[in-house]
Amino acid sequence: MYTQALNQQDGVATQATPASEDAGAVARFEARVAAEDKIEPNDWMPAAYRRTLVRQISQHAHSEIIGMQPEGNWITRAPSLRRKAALLAKVQDEGGHGLYLYAAAETLGVSREELYAQLLSGKAKYSSIFNYPTLTWADIGAIGWLVDGAAIMNQIPLCRTSYGPYARAMIRVCKEESFHQRQGYEIMLTLSRGTAEQKAMAQDALDRWWWPSLMMFGPPDGESQHSDQSMRWKIKRFTNDDLRQQFVDATVPQGHHLGLTFPDPELRFDAEGGHWRFGAIDWAEFKAVLAGNGPCNRQRLKTRRNAHESGAWVREAALAHAAKRRARAAQPARAAE
Ligand SMILES: [Fe+2]
Ligand SMILES: [Fe+2]
Image: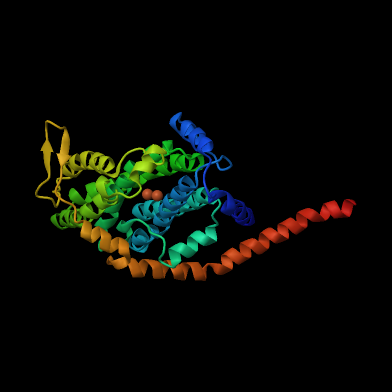
């Protein structure tokens, strides 16, 4: 798999950056996208389409992998066996999502090693939300409910994204995300119906995770660098602001059902428009966290680097095992000669 990806990359390096792209080929590509045809790895595609996808899919993969840390932090402290089993399964699912997505990115001719190197050096971005700390058990509820809830809003439309391998990976990912969201909401429900102290924990978690969850949809449409072209190429199917509004509309009634309040004095239902209107998002905070200055950025990368280094022997052992199997498979053929 790995060597194959490297070879593909060699082929792609020349193919992906032509001096000028043939207008006819671009027009044929755009007509296919407009007709809802899926673009597959061996199909011709504009270099910018390939670059955008590599960036988006790899950022998505990194987010899944880094996203294992805030919740992994609570596996040993889950309050019951049932909660521990569910959380363990959820964190493992996130690792699996990372793997599908790295595999999807590899089909575009980039190697997994290259993508890891970009993450570990701090060059690649991942979702800003995972740089916030998980202070209490209620944070596990709030993350499942809000963070996975926001991920679902983002990812359901990606099941129809124009690039085939990405769209197919998303179908399975989304099924698992709904379980993540429900387990989180169930934790919030249990805490909100519990003692006054438990309800206060749930409220505190909502207060801390609400605004960072809204930031997960990315900058407002007017400032989003890549939005227009991504919409035209059907890499994105809705704008950041549209998805954010959908999330708020779905989530506010759920919070009220819990008997909790949102940390936004401007939140109100606009009966005419049929939407929950919310206050201004602190984009300065978003930019600071994205630039590496959130509460946990350094810790997250350090943990990831340590895991990568201490897992080196597993990768080496797997490669050695694969080489032995290949050698063994070749032997009977030689004996028969
Ligand atoms: Fe995920
Ligand atoms: Fe998830």
